[in-house]
Image (cartoon, rainbow, N blue to C red; front, side, top):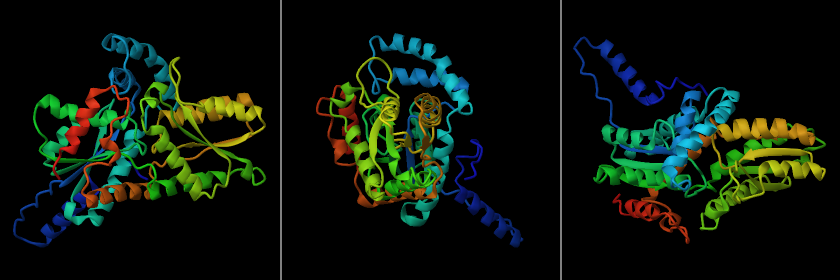
Length: 397
């Protein structure tokens, strides 16, 4: 897909089309025409994600916000320790970003997906149109709080917080939802917009179909005599076991996506769900992706396909960790025969259709959130989670 420069990204195509049509009618008439007002968006869709630094200069601030996020991790003396860790890690992370083109493409892909989604929605649901997408990142601009301000300024009537993580975790989607609650709590005022949430969608049929098609496309590129032996490694971002043991639903929801995809592929190949991006010495959910690649090689399984199953757009975990660290460096070290990586969903039109379908079904359902969101983790330690859930469930649609 053609990606417009970021300065243009926020101008939905259909409004430019309306302006062009108005200009065409104006030339036919000799009377001075009053330019029609651009219709204000009726429904605002806030696409939530952690985001990634677009330039190397943004890396430090990205890391600082990340290490200060108490919804993601709690550190002793966090306000002092976070700046120290961020400063120490910046050079290494900058080096990784420089290897993938100098920044994260996540904003570019979110804009492509958002634009295609609202175009479809305007046709599918004219009574809630015009629809406008907004990008709300957790650790880089445009920040979630900045996006909410823009939505309020635009006079949006119905606001949908739409997580771009298909599988729910308190440390990702939960953190973004807490940011929305904190924004209003800090201001001490009620939202002007009516809020609801699409908080998880791990088994949406079109999501499953996208993943299955991307996997099949890659499998077809393996040598025919090796194809049936290829081990499919579904790789998702790992979580500390302390979070898992509190009752975070993420591992089960990632597993549900994997099951749906393998069913779609008629269980054509052996597969495993593995976990990447562990940091620090504490126990994390395993097996780790890199250790799995090594272990399979040692046991004579040397053809494998990596599938990023919890990420829908390319970013550092796919472009650097999977493509460079694992598929190049590690694979050479262990003597892998053939290793490939399934493409991320990025600009796939079917994926934009999935997003539009999720929003359309959500609007039709008249529900504020899933039943699952109303339940705190059984061993929850974050009092803000309960307040956030109450904030959303008290919304009147």
